Length: 112
Image (tube, rainbow, N blue to C red):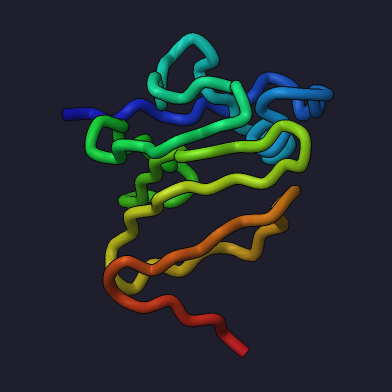
């Protein structure tokens, strides 16, 4: 089964609200898709059933996938699950907000 993909944005412009973190990296997410249909913006987030969320393809990192769990348009902070093959090397990057990292299996190393 093919995974949905991030599509490069047509413009690097950063919107005031919404998907600023993604679009600041030249990435665009389909705003009509329901990646987390249980989420309601009422201040109480409750839980996320990650089994119901699709793995999205990361075309910049072949073989890698992610599930967006939470984003904050106010701060740029985000939480995602990432699935990567053993030995994957991520390019140098700058996050526009806080990023939480939890390793569920395997290990994460940072070169010196």
